[in-house]
Length: 508
Ligand code: SF4
Ligand code: SF4
Image 1 (tube, protein in one colour):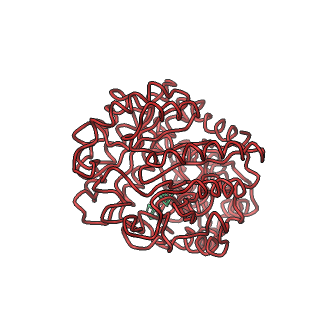
Image 2 (cartoon, helix red, strand yellow; image 1 turned 30 degrees about the horizontal axis):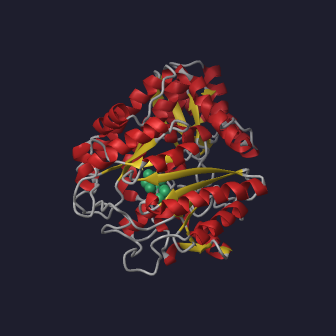
Image 3 (cartoon, rainbow, N blue to C red; image 1 turned 45 degrees about the horizontal axis):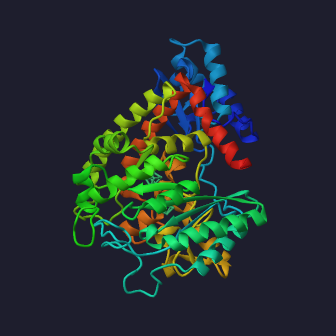
């Protein structure tokens, strides 16, 4: 048995106790919470409590499979497998499996995810600034303006555009809340972000100056629908090395299904040449596309090929539309199965490229591999409300950009700072230990109940687990574990890039 994840075989007191149990004839042993998968012709286990991955040799696999069926004492187990395996090898492997907590004493108390809240103040790593809540497109499925919107940005009290003063206050807030972190990430968002380009431009200059004064570095990025890109803006983004993500749904007929102007006209013919001009000029950072998948535009491979080969994007990330159930464009059960099959095919294309150290732009698989590689069992699905916060046009701070402007999800303001009580209450209520539906799910180290905004849209409650897409999440996590196992066997050096990136982030 060998470790392929980053979690070490920690010889904790508790682990040694289980190992002792494994060595005691009378104790009954059972398989610990795990997910078995195969990659590169070899079995692996993903251990749920520790999120560690181990490759199993034949003996270890036989033990795990047998103990998954029912509990055995050590002697019963060795007797039952002695016909096909060496007794001494079985004994040694049992002890080793117990040490890494792959097997457990059946009498051990049921382990729950410990409810340990992060220490606050927690450094803010990413601030998403909603510089406007207005948009020049009217995408039918949009969570901000469509049927599932949280904030009334048309008639509500929110200013439609962030002022320069609020943007400056936001920068000061971000640099203060970044704590000891040397780098802060500032992402501009909307509405359509570029509708407030003048404020964006001046905010970057201000953030640069303030960051230099306090000895920090600010990394800038934005999301845009690309309709307002023009030579002057492209020049600015290139010169300032602003990371750009473009929301686009693929070839013309797919883009024009939902991504339309207010008069109903499709946006493809407007955005395609502008994106090409951006890609040609802005080469200092990879430019990514972000695709919203719906039941009517579920053609992953075609969209990917169009966006990478015909438009020229470096990478493409897909997300199923966030919507209440029953909307015509919502992806439901069969749609999730279809999406999984297509993701799997593209992920295996990614694998073949990674084995040969070639680039492949399917960013969903890379992001999940990175999470698996970190070996973290997440207490929260994402950084929202912790290292990531969204700021609305009036300077109120929300759990994330999707809740910006919502009083119910407010965590303070850039003027008054973070409301620590509200933040603490948020972290208390959203911890994975509170999601009893997820307690027995093997995918929880990666999923942790899923996006709060998705839960709010589906169930009207951010604390709910997103049980409508569990099969999809488990299926996708299994695909990525298999890809991870293949890479660990066929090109482990490729996985080492995640360690280098983490180190670079720490010292930048
Ligand atoms: S939401 Fe579903 S897939 Fe995610 S951790 Fe909970 S039970 Fe598992
Ligand atoms: S809550 Fe959802 S939308 Fe907000 S940061 Fe987390 S995953 Fe993203």
